[in-house]
Image (tube, rainbow, N blue to C red; front, top):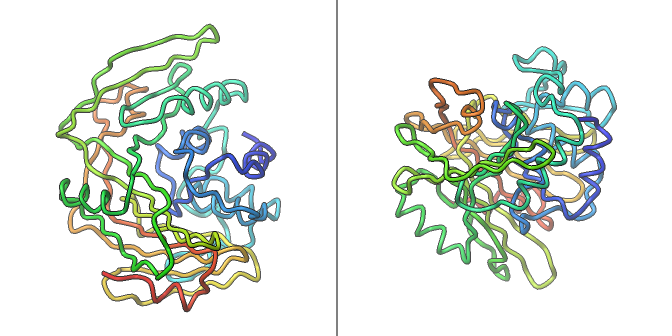
Length: 324
């Protein structure tokens, strides 16, 4: 995958970029570009976002891109929760070579992306060439914020909605994502091999084993300003890093009820990031481990990362929105 390919994706406003500013897990590393294509169509894409800012967010998700991003000047800084800078991305304990993380030819990557874009929903879908492939998040479209609240209560989820909606904003769209708890198994229901060798596998997940792993809620006002809140269970949450450009405002915070917090004012929007450590890890079945037939396909989340973004609020205003 070349940086030019990333920029082409970023410039296309129809491509929903998932902006999870967390350290890359193996699953995200391998499925990154397919997930960029395959997320829910209604995910909010920031209009008019400069190339640098968009790739900054991608780099915050995929730290493996950080060396290239620094070298090409697409990001200037990467910071930790406490605001300390990561000056040398290569010094972080993670893969740095894109081919090592996602060694697919461009045509194969495109075929996977197109297949996953057509297969969105609650079932698990894996598109692969041999042991290399990807899968989109398993999602359920939300009709209201109240529906999410009911699902969180029903599933006894540790996630909350840490946001007081300002007057004039109403629910616009959203979705919730699911993972399968450890001790349960995905069941293969169908397998299709295309003429180009692409294998598309569909798996059923037992509903009793599903738990909510994240959500997106987007609110909008009459002027078209958007306010979005994201919550996600995360691996290595304490090691999350965030990219920005010189001139952007970065401020670490002490926030009651949260273990870490950071606000960044980008030119086009403001983002508040918050982290809450879990009392105990939540284990889940790592779908792509099935490609390698691993004996123990289980990973674990250790924290929750929340993000509140606004196209209209500045740093001080957005800090008045969280409620716990």
